[in-house]
Amino acid sequence: MKVLSVASECAPLVKTGGLADVVGALPGALAAEGVDMRVMLPAYPGLAERLTRPRRLTVPLEGQGAATLIAGRLGEMRLYLVEAPELYARGGGPYLDQDGADWPDNHLRFGWLARVAAAAAKRGAGRWRPDIVHAHDWQAGLTPAYLKAVEGGGPPVLTTIHNIAFQGVFPAQVLGALGLPQGLMTIDGLEYWGGVSFLKGGLALSERISTVSPGYARELMRPDFGLGMEGLLRHRARDFTGILNGIDEGVWNPADDPALAAPYAAGKPAGKAKNRAALAERFRLTPHDDAPLFIVVSRLTRQKGIDLILAVLPALLERGACLAVLGSGERGFEAGFAAAAAAHPGRVGLVTGYDEPLSHLMQGGGDAILVPSRFEPCGLTQLYGLRYGAVPVVARTGGLADTVIDANPAALAVGAATGFQHDPGEAAALADAIGRACGAFADRAQWAAIRDAGMRQPVGWDRSAAAYAALYRDMRARAS
Ligand code: ADP
Image (cartoon, rainbow, N blue to C red):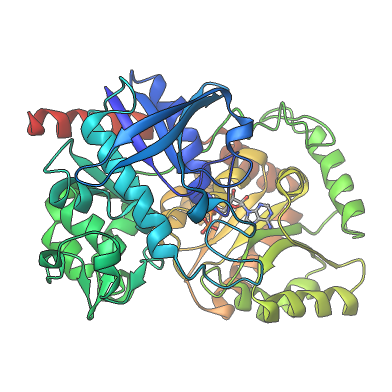
């Protein structure tokens, strides 16, 4: 089974969030299922240089010249980089310029990614021709449109929604520049409130749709979560499924993690204390032995409930707890934590920016991780928290609700509890969950039971990789 995975980011090459982790982990996870998955990405600056044995391939495009791919490997992963210097060879990030504004030609940049993916899917990249295309998020959303409307058909497409809040909506006029027929500007095509939605194209024209947790799949069919796509997703409910993300247990393993101060594992937690001390030192905190050191590793946005954390900070500090925050995002939130750190030295610490090794040390040293998202498609940081014994305190929504077992009396009685859940979007509910976590922490045996149950919870890719492989097989069977 050959699958072409099309995305705008892929760890460890280029990452702004969980999408990259998933795209980067899937090929290795699926290899065990007999799936040969290769990843197609834009050739952002510096990427080609990191591939081993790079070589150029030409992909003819239906009616419109040819595109160039750089094929190569990164470790075991095989990649195709779409070479288009006028679109991708520039500073800044994958989506934003140096000042944080969207690139004005994002429709062309990601339209081209989909255009080339469709051609490679139909005609092959060199001699390799996929059975299935797996397109991720709006950036790859036009792939089935190009396959159907320009290439005249090809392998079936699975579109995965990693976050419905990002839809890739542009004015209707871009359709011409994208080389797509006006006939696609319909309610069951790309049309979305008079504009063009790349994501909607993926949802309407793909053979199958998935998202990254069963809980989020159910939520997306409701008006309060679907952001206008709920009707389409309900209409396509039979082709729509939720498959939980896993984590890359090679990269995220507390027993063997170069970013940690000391290794540890479930049943051998001694090293955790050294990481707690290293984390405290890094953030200049002086945590008490009988109150948790909470961590936050997150984009600092309203989606992530960051305003709620700021609101409950006084209650958290009153319990004698500490807070270490690693994140970047909305200036107001960064300023809020900076002010709290200044007002409460030794109790609140902040590192702004993006720091991958520090994110590992946070999970290693933290007693508990706060993830009070208003919505959360899957969430990875609570999974890292489970694996690293940073007990998750999460909002009861989407993938968070699917992956953390609340420490209610029944779950505690049978040793199943792995964290704490609270109603989403409510500061009082978050404060209550933090209070429950502090209470549990003070009872060493109870805390150890919750933490160890979490560390033993399977959070790898095994089951989900099998689910994807089964889905691909079903798609191929139906296509032939
Ligand atoms: P999302 O993709 O919505 O941002 P996820 O929880 O799915 O949320 O994934 C976030 C990923 O980004 C995780 O791997 C997390 O560790 C990482 N991350 C978020 N903020 C930072 C940061 N400031 N520094 C390092 N890693 C971060």
